[in-house]
Image (cartoon, helix red, strand yellow):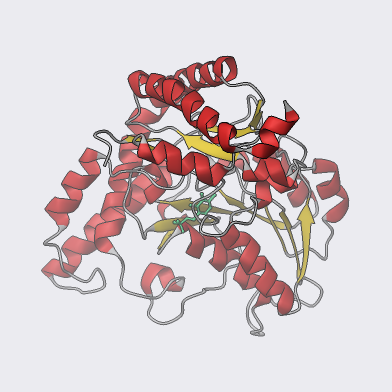
Length: 395
Ligand SMILES: *Cc1c(COP(=O)(O)O)cnc(C)c1O
């Protein structure tokens, strides 16, 4: 094992914030069911509602508009799956409303759910993106009609960091009276997100991407927006998501959000500085490389880069030997050797998609670590290229 760990895979998941860890350890003994009327129940209820208020106020929502769910994936599944609800009394169940528009670069939990809906008779259209990963707004303008039931566009991409103009997109969608959802898992806590300002109907959050625990997420549902539960049963979460609340996860999530509200602004500036240094170092020291994603409308800590003649998987493994953790496209897609759907969608050839790595910086990364990366990466790329007949032939 290398003697150090430089963790630069914060878009995959993040370590718990020390303050989050503290409140979770303190809450470990809390066992009351928030639905119970007695003392232990009321104590749990109070902590859950305090966390809800923190999440709500951080995104400019009211507490009744925030429901806790098991993950970002569940939140996205909930919003999309409502489209195929067959119950007569469900507000979603309108003749002709069975159409959804999303994009080619969404997280797999949106793409796979869309595919499943398609098989159940829902029409699904995918918006293209440009070479920076920005959604084609004209295509949206033409595509959204009064037959559309929902448009879902992610706010910030997990692989390349590109940030969409959600406010403008929501405006276009609403002009047709259509509902709009955004997967803001990578955006909330990294850049300002205000649901009033953005004008969205549904917005997805997740705990573990912002130094909170895994297995907890939240969904913002605008007051008055039609809703259809994915998980039915008890009356929890105002009847919108059955199942006894994950109290410990909710408490940790609330604390993580509270810490973000204190640290985000300064952290955004600090990460931008680290990334600029990293960018410059890579550019200066490694030939035949290319940065992927939008140069400015990008998450502060995300840097996606591809190297000619070097496979992403090989880079990951060699960096791992040097104690540096990064990833190829996305954690959810790795394990398969398919090229990243996001890199393909922005029009880069499959070789590029195979040769790209995602470096995602977070609150624990230091300038010293960035310098270590700048020293190590050229050696790793050099080693891999030396073994690549393809790369040498091109020289
Ligand atoms: C991680 C992620 C998700 C899924 O969130 P989980 O809580 O891990 O299910 C959804 N969308 C984006 C953009 C993500 O990065």
